[in-house]
Amino acid sequence: MKLVICKDYDEASLKASEIVINQIKNKPNSVIGLATGSTPVGLYKKLIEGFKNGEISFKQVTTFNLDEYLGISHNHPESYHAFMRDNLFKDVDIQEKNIHIPSSDLKNAEKNALNYTKALQKVQVDIQLLGIGTNGHIGFNEPGSSFDNETFAIALTEQTRHDNLRFFNTIEEVPTHAVTMGIKTIYRSKKIILMATGLTKADAIYGMLKGPITPDLPASALRNHPDLVVIIDELAASKL
Ligand code: F6R
Image (cartoon, rainbow, N blue to C red):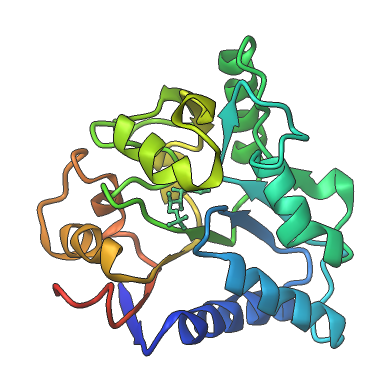
């Protein structure tokens, strides 16, 4: 495991973007696993800059997103489909056919999750980007999720729904279910970059890196991954 402690969010975004940009330069047809949430926004801005200044192209890049809410339309402004379009895809030359995001269709969630797993089993993800929840979740693998899961549908905990309330008007609007790559799927990536910034993430980072490896803190499952890079700021590192 490589731990990179940065001064602040901007530096963390820069460090993560350097790794992703080098990956795409060295292997233009890279497969990149993407995350949403507030953490990777700065990194995506830097990838867009890299595209605009001609450093990288996404023409041959394939992406697989980690997760999506269930039961909201792909056009809902808080869906992860919309998030990816607004924060990365609309500004780079990625081909629509190379973009994979789990479907938000609640009714067919099980079948769609199985198909997503099958699609992921056909490729090798070169880099998986991750954030971390205040409760140590990764993707939507909430505390208690088995380390053996592939892509699956899950009911969100009240803590995660409250964490995500800032993106919605009322708690009733926050979806109750989501679909996520499982920990087994995430673990298969060649490289994993987990980013976290701010004091609210300090306990989760401590638990991930210093606590027991346990489904109670899903991110702890990654600690023995052969190529894990943890990029955090001083606040997120403050309890280490
Ligand atoms: C998003 C995701 C979530 C977030 C986590 C942190 O695709 O998988 O696990 O990474 O909830 O969210 P932020 O970055 O908003 O603090």
